[in-house]
Length: 460
Image (cartoon, rainbow, N blue to C red; front, side, top):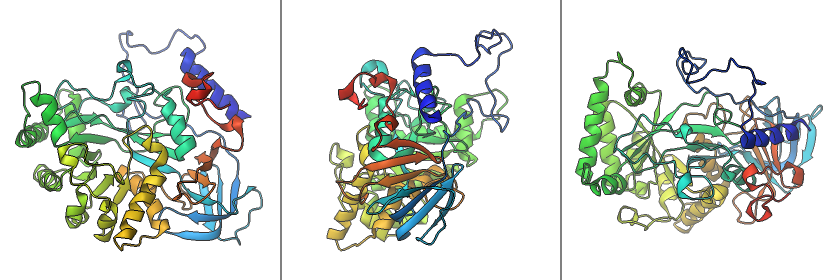
């Protein structure tokens, strides 16, 4: 009952813009002379997370096939969680006294699904120009912008990703028009009035970079640099040199982000399609003193699996989406399997409001392509492509992404094999709180934007 109240409250607040101050006149305001930005627990981070888990109950999932996200599989397994944390994962011998037992016989349990590449909230539904807040396409370098400042928490895409895809965490990135697009933000997939109420506590920031056709097309079309790939690199290298010379005496939002990258506190997520370009970017990173965490849309990653492994760079990829522009022509269905064969890190991503609802199916397609090539990858390992490996590349694997004692109880109970096209999430927990239940229509979250529109997602 508490949960319903909170969900209703979150939706109501989102619509009405209600205040939590009860009308007090001492609310901080940008117009107040001595106003300063809110400070985080570390003393210097503005816009801190205010996320607080929804209330949950001690829960025991019994009798299901458990994939732990780290390659482990337990048949007739048991998963225990309480107070928002995973307590134990094991076989049927685990004691369940004091827990609400849920029979998972014939079903499957995985960690919550994680999408490393999403624009939900920055490009919310409906897709109209007024909602286009994902690309600050006014300069090839905009490290000063933060994706979270565009996120609209009411985007119906969040609840669709939860209910249809079992997505419990996701990274929102600015778009790829720019060489340096700005900071990303990692969110817990829960209803909240503000983006701070969704911010994943303790998650590092990321910075979006892009190489290839997008930046040279956008800015070359405006008659300015860069208009070529060599221009891309020249502008990028000068940006890093300028960042290295920054002394911090006068605040510069862009250089604060770039220095966060150089200090290793902000992770680089680099949109890049061609293998030769990815290799050059890794060399540029070494020259300038930073590290690429993951290449996104890496359709040619299979050509340089050894280099990606050597440099500990993940490849965030689709199963079979390629050929839609010249730099995406040389993609192959076996990309993920060949990367795995080379010992490199594979992540399945969406970059799409609909694809985020089917990351499990995308992983299954990539697995099937590998099998046709003779590369047989166990189901339990493939589940890690959309759970643990995504968490690793986002810097949150010590908190979520796998079913291990002490980690966040982000859990999905599937009504069948998660690598089957016929399977769907039956129940989804975020930090141990039941946020979706397909068997209980009262536990189907819906954005207030869809209230009263049954054909648009409101199925109550």
